Amino acid sequence: MPDQTTAYTPADSPAYTPTDRSIPTRDRERASYDRASVHAILDAAYVCHLGFVRDGLPVVLPTLFARVGERLYVHGSTGSRPLRMAGQADPGLPVCLTVTHVDGLVLARSAFHHSINYRSVVVQGSAYQVTEQEERRTALDAIVEHVVPGRTADSRPANAKELAATAVLRLDLDEVSAKLRTGGPNDEPEDVDLPHWTGVLPVHTVYGTPVPADDLADGIDVPDYLKTM
Image (cartoon, rainbow, N blue to C red; front, side, top):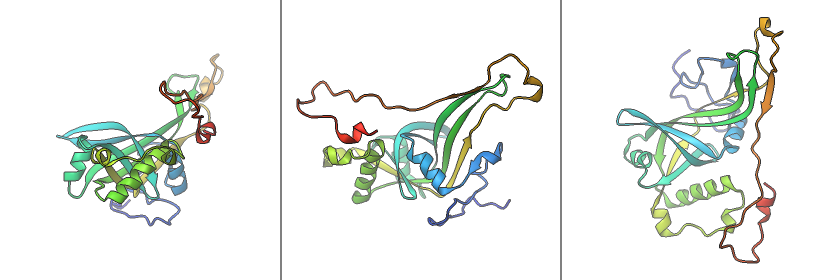
């Protein structure tokens, strides 16, 4: 197919435009460019992995993030290398951002066909350091809300000193792909009669009972937004 690595997909399109980099080389039938599916996978994740190249070597860092429309925000210390590099790079810092959810362990009769059911998203592009103060506050509030919806209204906003110590990266959703696996094992026909259990062990994320801080003042109850998580 022709090179589409610079393709731009309008925000009102139902799907992202596939590019040479976003089309997988294996299991292409599992790839999805559906915008709603991509957003759902991103919004269900707390941690992303941000990959970039430093001094000629690959680096991948786990960090918190949030999606605001067609844009991802990643935060970190002003001393963080990718944050500094994004502020110095022109035009932006080339990055690859990924998220993955494990939904099940797929146990086949053969060792070769063991797998996992998963949902993942890969975003490639150039990250830019956010310097405009209003956008920085929007991004940081979005990251807090992404972790616990309702928390920004129930906590002290960052002060000037804290904002000065925090940097934010912006990555637009343009070159994006999702990949999913569902269903059971794919055993070979000649293995069907083997005497081994086969199937899927579902994996779920659950929230426990909130544990108050040791210095929490008496009379402060667990907020409703935590009770409904």
